[in-house]
Structures are given as structure tokens and as C-alpha cells.
Length: 233
Length: 221
Image (cartoon, rainbow over the protein chains, first blue to last red):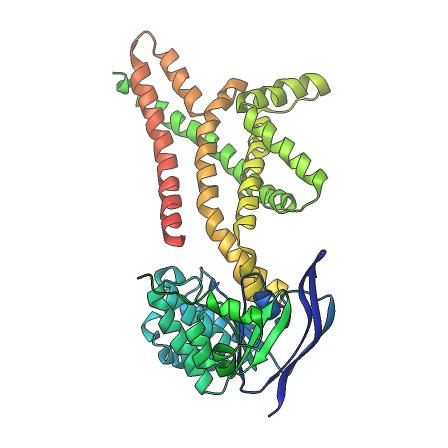
């Protein structure tokens, strides 16, 4: 398979604090990479560096094509309807024909079960619905790599599933995805490969089965234990 | 009650003309304030400490100083100091614009800084250029927040024009006083009726504007 993303010796610092330390990583086309780790380990920063939202102090990021990103807080444009949100970038940035973009937007909305909401404003949607629109907004640009930054972290628990189902559906279509998440069961189900990040470094880079059942490092073990609960009585 | 003097002679027309003077001065001042306020507001978002200090002082002066004192300073003070005659109308436009620009600039600054940083980031992630981000994403949101707020400023300006009679401008309140004075013999209790009509005129001028602001606010938030 072809390499679609290649990161070499990436280092990111905020003033004196090193957030990412010498990260090297290669992602193949169609691969679903899940990035886990404790808060503040640099997971989100890694995605933001890949997407050029942060300047980097050292190293290289090479992407074959465009990236699309979905944020934790959806960030739809509040003054535009769902359809306008979806059509803005394809029409203005990619200069595609309005009719064609509109058709694709409607098809994608249908796919995520939101056909009836196309003329609504973001304020009229639930969190899960907004996040599904945000996913479609990234998809419609036909990115080669999709980045998901804790996309369910701000949602009510009962809305997490509808968003994760959309991402699972994308995995089936062989999209290349980098997913930062705290949903361990989801990570295990969707990942081709798991990266465990701590203190700005990659501690483990392995298959989901191995990571969740037999993590090698002590740090990964103690991280995974935080998701377990002993019976109280 | 004094309502009878309203329609005596040209009284009612004179009251309307007085209202016209008030509205004209507010309108001119509002246009100046909005244009200058936009520019000053954008400058105020810069992180330069000198600009911050100067705009801070400007805002505080406008907030602390009663508009009437400002009117006196400009109309009587400057005339005495420079020996040049500034007309009462020009003085009031200067004072109202000085005040309105500060208020408007503060609103613009507030709106600009209230757009979350991540709106810029998600635009960038979609590939929008800086200019496209401003034109399609940021400015439309700012305008929607700004219009209801600046409409409220217009109504406040119209109300505050009642002060300009203190520097000799014959606006609606002054016309009211003149009518009462002129009819003191025939209708000694005209004050209530005349001022009630003045109140009604202010109300008719401001109410639709304030309704419009409320409507836009509901529609856009």
C-alpha cells in the first residue's frame, strides 16, 4: 500500500515546553490510526500540526493530498444553514459548480440521516447532529486524510453512538483516518493500528488487539487501568 | 389639560419641525459614529500597549463625562479659547459623534473578540484563505451581532438630543417650552398636555427603531 502521510522527527514547542518530541510516523492509504493517551500528552497537537494549524519547530510533515478535520466543538458557521455550511468551501475554495456540490451535499446528508435538516441553522440541531454535519463538511472536500479530534468528547452520552456509527461507516469505505479519542471500545473496534502517546512521545505503536490485551509498556498498562472499574461489592 | 394649545396656529407643525431637528442631528452623528467606530474598534483589538492605553482613556472620558458638560466644553469652551465660532448644531454633532464613536468602537471591539479563535481555525482547515474567512465567516457574524446593538445606540442618541436645547438649539423639547410660555395667559396649565405630546413624539420616533432591534436580535441569535 502507498504511504499517504509521513511524519519525520516532528518537534513542537510552546515557548520552553516541548509538547511533541521527535515524532516519526507513517500512515498508509486506507489505514485507520487511533491515537490514545492521557490528557495533555500531545494527541490533539499532533493532529493540529499535521493540519498546519500549528507551526512546528523541527521535523517534516508530508501529506499526499489534502486533509479534512473535525473538531471537538463542531465549529459549524452559526449564520449559515446546514447546506450553506457544506457548500461554502467546495464552491469558494475548490471552485466547483454549485449544482454538483449541492447534489453531493444532499447525498452525504442522506447517508448520515440528516436530509430533513439541510435548511436548518446549527443552533436548531442537537450536538450529535451538528457533529455529523461537521463530518460531512470535511468529507465533501474529498480529503485524502481525515483527522478527528475527540469528536465525541463534548457530546451527551446518548449522542456518542450516532457519531461513532458515521465514522465506522467511513472506515468501511477505506478512508484514511487519524482518530484521537477517549472511547476505548470504539478505538478497539475501528483501529487498524493504535498509537499510544505520552509526554509528547510515541510509547507504543501496535495492533489494537495487542495494545488492549497485552500492552508492553508499564505506562500503557496504567493508562488502560484508568478505564477499568472494580466491583464495589 | 393643555392639549388645546397643540393645534393652535402652527404649533403642531413647529413641534414636528423640532423633532426633525433632533432626528437630523442624531442621524448625522450616528452615521459618523458608525463609520469611525468601526475603524476605532478594529484598531482597539490590536495588542499595542499605547493604543490600548489611549483607547482606555478615551472610553473612560466618554463614560464619566456627562454629555451636557461635553456640549458646554465644545460650544462655549472652544469658542472662547479659539475665538472661532462653532455653531450649536456643529457642536452637538461633534459631541454626539465623540460619544457615539466610543460606544460603537467598544461594541465593535467586543464583537470582534467574541468570535472564537476556533472559527478561524475551522475555516483554515477547510482551506479558506484569510480574506475568504473574513468575508464569508467572520464579518457576517459580526454584523449580525452589531446591528441590534447599534440600533439601540441610535435610540439613545435621539433621547439625548433633548440636551441640545441647553446650547440654544430649538428642538422638540424647546419648541414645547416656547408653546407653553406663549400660551401662559390663555392656558396656564398647558405644560402637561404639551410635554405629553413631546413624550409621544419621542416615543413614536424611538419605538419602531427599538422594535426593529429586538426583532433582529431574536432573528439572528
